[in-house]
Image (cartoon, rainbow, N blue to C red):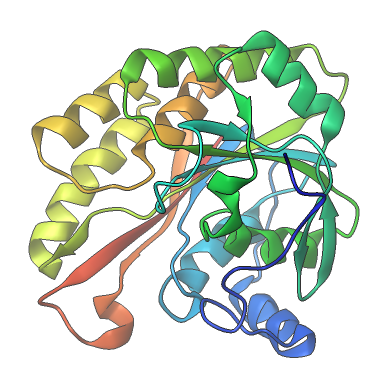
Length: 270
């Protein structure tokens, strides 16, 4: 059974649990930008805000947030279905509740039968939850569809991306497709930057297959390559022609530890 209200799993750990502190934190990361764009998709990191909030914030600051979003993330917990969607209820953060877009979720399940309604995959997963306060700070009136991916099969990810594009095309208003992903994990800063930029180059080329291949062949531990492959596939089908690296950093930039870092890339696809 899909639960009606999905409670915060990482409030007070990945980000402040107090509403006023959280809003101040998020606003500090939403760096002022000269112009905003209506994008098709984006890649944003999902670590604790102290490490990756400035990268995520740079992306969200750049975007016009539409009324409807699809947020794809990796399944870090191993719980639930490999393609887990929630299609009813709302997610709660300290900033309030965000309704799930039931009609959009139902259309996705109808178009792609491998998507299974499953709250278990989402209950303890942080990678969508940490994006919501940024969206809430920019828009008080949006709905979203959460999808957690526990599969690394290219054909499944590609088919999901095609399904997302077909459903979005049929809508009368724009839908933003967000891929939640960190980059390479737990190698030194120099190695991580080299590996990450190999993956980033494929994302900037809007090359979903190339991203998949380089992640596999170069042993890049990018946790959200699946969501990014699906987002890029959808983006190309929806007419995306360019991608911009808005910001890149590693955890070492904050912690000072360059021996074991995680990479963070913020990318806008339009």
